[in-house]
Amino acid sequence: MVRSLTPDDFQQVIELGNRVHGEGYLDFGSLEKIYQLGIKNNINAHFVAVSDETSAQLSQQITQNEIIGFRLTYAAGQWAVDQWCTPNEWPVTEQSMCYFKCNTVAESHRGQGIGSALLQASIVAVKQQGAKAGVSHLWKQSPNNSAVGYFTHAGGRLIKQHPNRWNQKLDGSDYLCVLCGDDCHCTACEMVIEFT
Image (tube, rainbow, N blue to C red; front, side):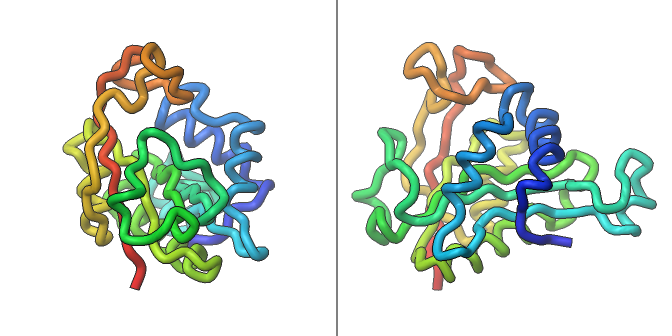
């Protein structure tokens, strides 16, 4: 089941994010800031996927009502466009572009359409907020390039590739790559989904 993220979910979201993306990926302070950036016109663009009785029975590691995935999304006009963005190539203005910050699904539940369901829920919300498109930086080095593949399948198109996007030694990135550490040479694929 997919539903809106609430502050009551923060502990589970932090634990899942750190388990999937590496220790320190999220904490209460960073998640609270992200949470505020996704709410506009009293509409929440963040979502969680919660296990149901069936999925709990299928996995001995998952309990009913446990968060098995989440999507964090910044509302249009509420996030800072940085040097890793190419707004002159976007189909809409910066003020009409939301930012798909993070999509995370527990390893035991991947390949079941949960990531796509979370993305679709966020798209519905950001459209209600007034966004006309969404941009994200997808991790090209994800296993089998699955991040780019999933976003492409959802209608995303590549705008630009950004090598070394998460290299802390070069620009003080706030993300520590789980593959490379602080000297990350992974590529971020800046991709856009235009809403119809």
